Length: 128
Image 1 (cartoon, rainbow, N blue to C red):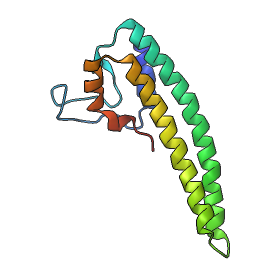
Image 2: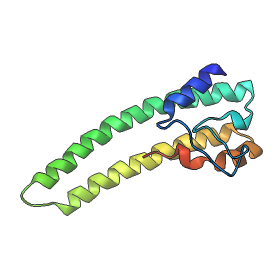
Image 3: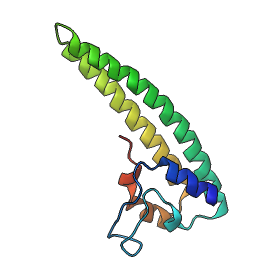
């Protein structure tokens, strides 16, 4: 349980986010304690988070490469709108696929009640 908490905190970019919808008006950003996961769920979520972290790091590397291409396109004498658009679409498409896969895997682990609670904070798990 401690390892899961540490992993979750590592994934968060900000420290605390307050919400009025659940948990007595307080909620710790990307903390899953409110779901009351059992040990099997904790292990599965931990595995998902570790794999997600690796996938996100790979995505981030590729995204940076594509961002450099975007900068080069802007610096060119002639702006190539189609290339620029294609690169942006690639970035967002990969982002959406990564996030969808991640959320889908978590969805499979959670019970119906847990999914309802998790849905209240889905925005925290969105990729940017």
